[in-house]
Amino acid sequence: MRYLWLILPIFFTLTGCQSAYYSAMEKVGVHKRDILVDRVEEAQQSQQEAQQQFKSALEQFSSLIKFDGGDLQRMYEATDSEFQACSKAAAEVSGRIDSIESVADALFDEWQDELELYGNDKLKRDSASKLAATKRQYTSLLKTMRRAEDSMQPVLASLQDNTLYLKHNLNAKAIGALKGEFNSIQKDINQLIAEMNTAIKQSEQFVAALKQ
Image (cartoon, rainbow, N blue to C red; front, side):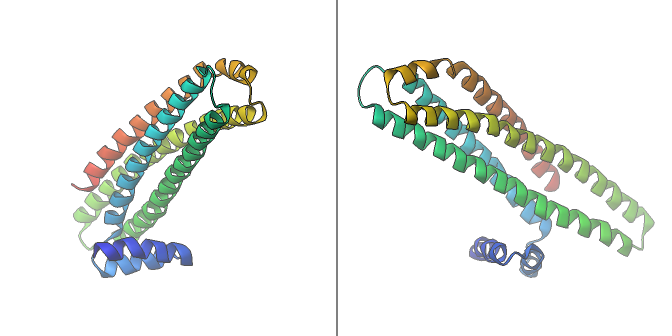
C-alpha cells in the first residue's frame, strides 16, 4: 500500500491529472484529508531541510570572508555548491506548498458539495461550521508558508550575486568586497529561519486539528 502511495503521485503528476490521482487513492482507502496531512508533513520536512541548508551556506560564506591564503578556486566551488543546494532546497519547498494547495482546494470543494447531501440539518450545520474553521486555519497556514517561501528569495539573490562576484574576481580584493555583505545576509537568513519556524509550528497545529 505504501508503495502505491509513493508511485501514484509520480504517475499522475506526469500525466497532469490530479483529480484522477485523488480518485485512485480513494479507491484504496486513502482520502483527500489523508493526502493533505501527508503533504503538510512533507512540507514541514522540506522547510527543516531548507533551514539547515541556508545555515550551511551562511557558514560557508563566513569561511569565505575569513579566507587568508590557499586555494581560492576551491573556495569558490564550495561557495557555489552551497548556493546551488540552497536553490534546490527552495524549489523543493515551493513544490511542496503547491502540492498542499492542490489537494486542499480539492478537499474543500468536495466538502462544500457534500454538504448538500445531508438530510439532517443539525449535522449539516455542524459540518459546515467545521469546514469554515478548517478553511480559516488552512488559509492562515498557507499565508505563513508563502511568507516563509518569499523570504528565501532575497537570500538566494544575495548568495547568487556574491557567488558570481567571486567567480569573476578570484582574488583577495574580491574577498574584501564581500565582507561588507555578510551582516546583511546573516540578518536575512535569520529572518528566513524564524519565518520557517513559525510555518512549521502552524503546520503541526493544522495537522493535529485535521487528525481530531
